[in-house]
Amino acid sequence: MNLRFPEFTGPRRRGVLLGGMAAVLVLAGCSGQDAITDDGVTSGYVAGDGTIETWAPAERSEPVELSGESYHEEPVDIADWRGGPVVLNFWYAECPPCRAEAPDLAQVSQDYADDGVHFLGVNHTNDAGTALAFERRFDVPYPSLHDRDAEGVAAVQGVVPLQAMPSTVVLDAEGRVAARVIGLVEASTLSGLLDDVLAEAP
Image 1 (cartoon, rainbow, N blue to C red):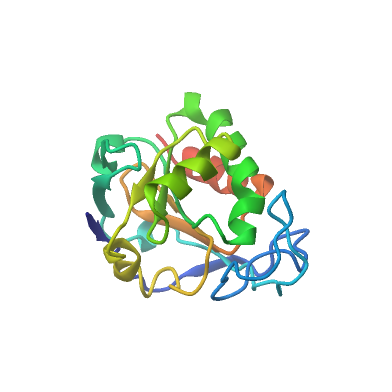
Image 2 (spheres, rainbow, N blue to C red):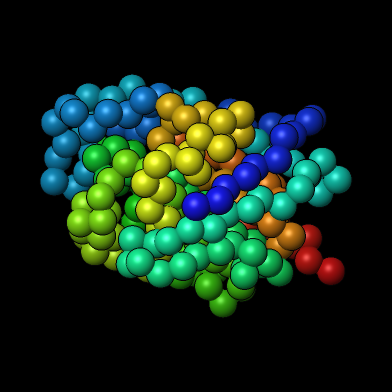
C-alpha cells in the first residue's frame, strides 16, 4: 500500500473541542482492553482533545497518494476519486470511540454520496474477520484499507498523531488535506467540514 501525506505550514485552527464530547470518547493510545458495553461505549476512557484544524486552499500542499487493497480484497486508489472530497477515517474495531462514531460516519457518507464525496477507512490493526464484522455491525457502506504492515499509518506521522484513534482527514477535490479531526468526529462537525470544501468548487 502507498500512502503519502504532505507537510504543512501555517495551519488555521477551526476549533478546540468537539461539541458534546464526554469521557466515553477518544484518548491517545486507545487500547480497547477495558470493559466495553455492547454498543461500543465505555466510561473507562478519558476524552482526548478533539482538535479540529483546517487549511485554506492556498495553504494546502501536494495531493495525498493512497492506494492498496480493501478488506474485501478489492483494489482502492483515491486518485480515482479526484474531483470530489474524500474522507479518510483511521480506526480499529476494539477502540470505543471508533465504535461510537461509526454510525455517524456511515450516515454522513450516505448523506453526501450524491455530492461526489467518497469515504475510506484505514485500519492497521485488525484482521479481515474482525474488520468485516465491525463493518457489518455498524452498517458501514464504504471500504477500509487493510494496512497490514502499518505503512499507511506510519506515513501519516506529523499530520495525524499515531497514538490518536480514531482520526479523520478531509481531502479537497484535488486530494489535498483540507481538515483533520483528532478524536471522535460528530456528524454535524464532519458535515460542516464537507460543506466548506464543497463550497470551494467553482
